[in-house]
Image (cartoon, rainbow, N blue to C red; front, side, top):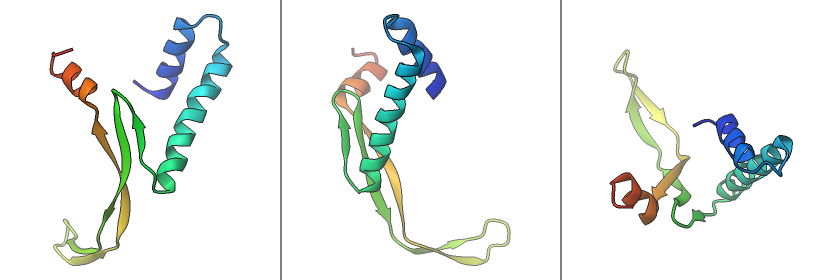
Length: 94
């Protein structure tokens, strides 16, 4: 599902809301998650999962085309851990 499909589904299930308002709500939610993660905060959505940021240390990698050693800088990457409810639902237990 992409963002526009999510917005359309929420708008369809809530006819009392204008689609442009639903779009603003969805965008604010995503923007807040992004801002929190940019600050290094953890974002937990109960029953769904938790978003956090993990640090990857600098390392020496390899260029797959040439095999040449390449220095890879330290970086921060997003990480998502599923919640128990989501995990159980995916495994047919919900």
